[in-house]
Length: 146
Image (cartoon, rainbow, N blue to C red; front, side):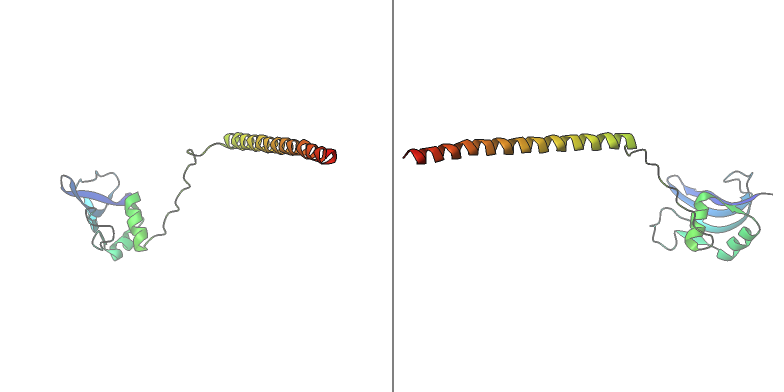
């Protein structure tokens, strides 16, 4: 018999309350055929409230030793209680980021624009120097004429 530790829903409409139960994996969630109730979970309470998750630690340890597999949500509760090792958080996908090829194109375009800006600045500096040079030569020739 494959036993699981999972949540069984109780409470009213839009006011959920869960029992943490040990049952056969083939049974329905709320079948009533539970082997043992090992805790309670009230999602309506604040996350930092100590009564949000109440576990009977000794019974949970005993069922884990017998081979009961916790559901994903119950596994989190057990990890927070320190009964099992926390699962590794998987790496998030990077689908929202641009591809390497696109990043390279953007970098190339920025380099090209920077090069154009440098050439433009150099041309302006050369034109300014050229404009000042004839003016200085004209001033020198006027001084000689006097």
